[in-house]
Amino acid sequence: MLHRRAFCTCASLALVSSLTSNSARAVDAACAVMTRDRQHAITPDEALARLKAGNERFIDGKTINCDLIQQAKETAKSQAPFAAIVGCMDSRVPPELVFDQRIGDVFCTRVAGNFINTDFLGSLEYAAKVAGARAIVVLGHSDCGAVKGAIDHVKLGNLTATLAHIQPAVTASKISGERTSKNAALVQAVAETNVKMGVAALTAKSPVLKDLVKAGQLRIVGAMHDLETRRVSFMA
Image (cartoon, rainbow, N blue to C red; front, side):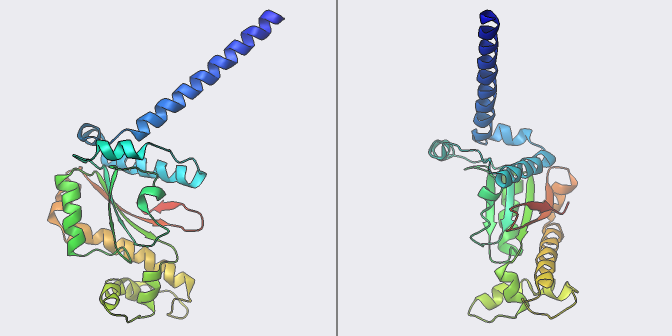
């Protein structure tokens, strides 16, 4: 019996050690800096899969803790992000945290209302064509203040021109009820429509991005982040 217990104890310790070792290797792999070789090995579909897996970790509270100082040092001379995110400036939706990514993993372009303009197009052309990003995600979110402002036709300095970029989505959203930000269904519909219009604009207004998509070197998708559930729902 003693021998049996000793064997079981050793076997249990070996199993725990193996699981711990495997977990450590998984974290090491996830924390590894995104190099050009690693980036080139990722397909557009795999790039989106990495973002989806990261959001699941974020939702489950199982985010990967890495040595960010070391990552900053390793990426100081070069970068090779595998994806680019067009996000809203909202403080509750930081893309790197929402997708559980680290220094050097993703490009982030952010503005109130996550709309697309010439500056964003140029930035994303650089991200995909020059720097090699495999996926672009236009990320909207629930309860968006910029969307509410556009619906209510807010006028305030330069913000007036900023919110004008979202007006096409307001016009296109045919939701019943009052046409104010008090209508939660309208706010959500406009946010989703704004994302869809942003996705369409990337290939309609950029031959560079359109050619990359056609060649299978890039995927462009829309997504919505729910502030309550923390879940990112992809539209494609």
